[in-house]
Image 1: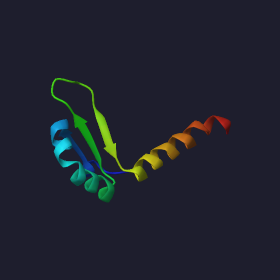
Image 2 (image 1 turned 135 degrees about the vertical axis):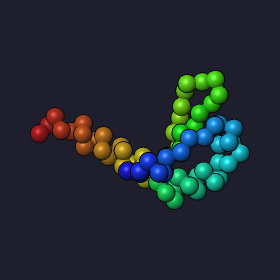
Image 3 (image 1 turned 90 degrees about the horizontal axis):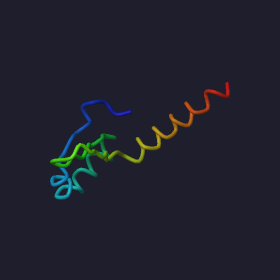
Length: 68
């Protein structure tokens, strides 16, 4: 998993203007970018496919622990 130094938070307006650069950061660093919008408490996260696969695998392993 990525460490906290690879986690960022950006306003949706910045993301719209800088998606290519943010994609580069996330895929190169296995980082996470939290996307926020003024006036909303909702968030979404941009993360690398490799990190998503890792998180899904961890959930799969943890969901199978009851079988042991």
